[in-house]
Image 1 (cartoon, helix red, strand yellow):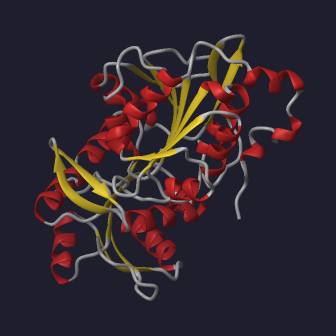
Image 2 (spheres, rainbow, N blue to C red; image 1 turned 90 degrees about the vertical axis):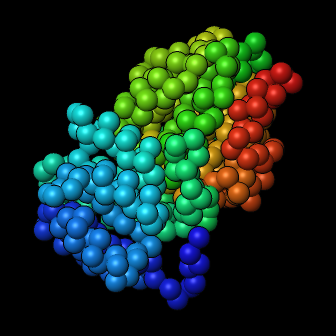
Amino acid sequence: MKSQTLNRKIKVLIVDDSAVVRQTLHEILSSDSGIEVLGTASDPFIAAAKMKEEVPDVLLLDVEMPRMDGITFLQKIMSQHPIPVVICSSLSGGGSETAIKAIENGAVEVIHKPCLGAKKFFEESKIHLIDIVKAASIARLIGPSNGRLSYRPAPKLTADAVLEAPSNKTMAEKKLSMVKTTETIVAAGASTGGTEALREFLEAMPVDCPGIAIVQHMPEHFTGAFARRLDGLCAIEVKEAETGDAILRGRALIAPGGRHMLVKRSGARYYVEIKDGPLVCRHRPSVDVLFRSAARYAGGNAIGVIMTGMGDDGAKGLLEMKEAGASTIAQDEESCVVFGMPKEAIKLGAADIVLPLRSIAEGVLAQCFER
């Protein structure tokens, strides 16, 4: 991993065939004192020539471009001179499958770029875009694993905006979360690097595993394709969540991009509710929203898992789960793409145990047997 000193700026190269997008991204990223835009390129051939002069810390890459598409260029970069790449593409219709392919070929993150109004979108998403670039800059590539490229590390609204504060719980709700059931559910959250981390986690799950509710920070229109991809790889069922979907054994529900997901309970049955709301910890869906709802409605019947990601979304929610009687697990630094979210949870004392990615599924199942 490249060392980032306090005085060293993150160097970014922007590759997009739209002059408006290049200019807008340049202005937004340059507005942050910690980022330096080395330059822009309208296609991969121009970008390759610029990279011979100076290699950037992060490459911001479009997919549909003249002379060479972004996925082909990504494959060439990863095979010849791997650096962190953030794909910035229009993700509608079949484009979502393209985004999945980008992740499989080593992209650190994917940003949804609308077909129309891209300039306005980027201006409104300034903080999120800068956060993604900073997260990508501290991800270190360690080479392909089973044909896949993997990584190692390197003022907010709270969940109260979506889920009422704990002090507002009714007595019935408090009693409901405390009542033990025969079913255990898992609430898991991840961000940067989470797509491949979740794949490894879910692929290790047997068909009779506890029901799982997942928040992965992802753009709208991406989560459906992501869920379908995992459904084809895993023994368990994986689907993009809809309101009313039951959290069942052998099933994982993934929060749809752009909407929050909450755990709810009716009798002994757990289900999810999908709802709109403000950004929480700069995200929608938010891990904190999921974890706080699990603390409220599942309590000691839940297991919380916080995985790789930038920032602190989920840290306070995981602590609430622990305080409500849930078992809690954080991914360790060595196996994280970015040791941000787990680190903040560990600092708060929210994690009962800290495990490498390869052991998290086993850890979850072990907790189920102990209950």
